[in-house]
Image (cartoon, rainbow, N blue to C red; front, top):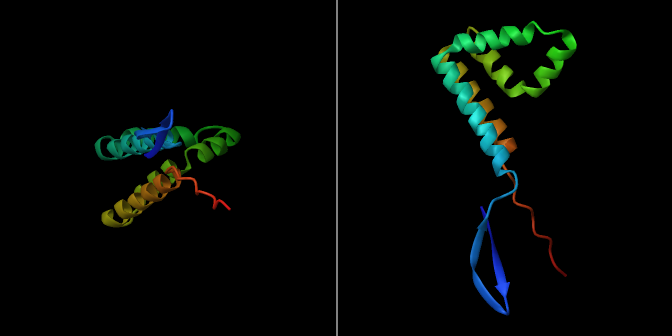
Length: 114
């Protein structure tokens, strides 16, 4: 979180915490990833049904859904490969980390004042 200082009548008050832009989006993405991992651990059949539904859509809709759900479908696809379990878990964790890193809010750079 960032902080701003409010000035009133020439007096500085204590810094006020503000929410960084994009924090809600990051929380939403983290929640979706949490649900994905929970389903992967508790009910992989549910994810298999969702993947089969995705593959059964008409081509245009399937392509659109692949674009909208790309990180999750790739993570599921990787998890369903025949690789060693630890390799699959490591790659899925890498996908989650990279995606959340991309979604993380950035602090705007302060421009040099001249």
